Amino acid sequence: MSRDKAELLQSLHRRDDLLVVPNAWDVGSARVLETAGFPTIASSSAAFAWSIGLPDGEQAPWDEVIGGLARMAAGVDVPVSADLEGGYVDSTGGIDRTVEALADAGIAGVGLEDSDFGSGDEGVVAAEEHAEVIAAARAAAEALDHPLFINGRTELYIRRVGADDARLEEAARRLALYVDAGADGAFCPGITDAEEIEELAKRVDAPLNVLWMPGMADLDELEHLGVRRVTVGSQTYLAALAAVERIAEGLNERDLGPLEEFGRPSHEAVRRVASR
Image (cartoon, rainbow, N blue to C red):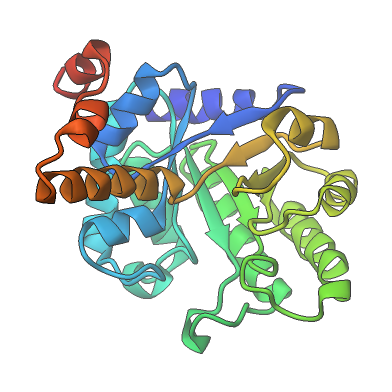
């Protein structure tokens, strides 16, 4: 079953249209997204960490992360990808062990980013160093006969690393290295300018993933620009928190309007959340 889901995820990225992949943080949110009709779902490392009261940046304990991913993968019928930051290699002992754990958990895809977690929120590791991690992850997946979809990710834009006028060139260089090392997709969160997105899509020989954020082009325009995968990261979780906040403010003022507005999803979503 795990291998079948990984093969399905690979096939979803071979289509010549836009794949929208919403992000979940637990089984309940994953089932709501599946019920809405999405053919695949990804986790959000930030949303999961925040949901257990911890910051993002591999601060959530590995046992809790892999346990949560396993529950999510088992709780839905569609392929699940893991937003796994740098791969948790300090916790697992190596990217090969991380990949083995992902396969055992039923995970079909993984995003591996080039953040330098030793430098706080500002840095990225050398591109060649991250390419080696991706190559090792690919080799480990092949050794397990598990066609894991690997999304090579650069943090240059989201962390605003380097000069503005040099960022596109460096992002293209990094993503090309990651694809050459074995990544199936290329992810550049934080890039928002339409011309830069179009140029990056032309220069990367893999499906380009962008993170949709308010103010960006809409999904149809992103597809026209050459984007082939869109995710929303922690924004689903933040929207859920915003609903809770509005309900709380209403209850404090004895106003039940927000609770009536947000208090219950569709009958099918409620049924699906508790279906297993």
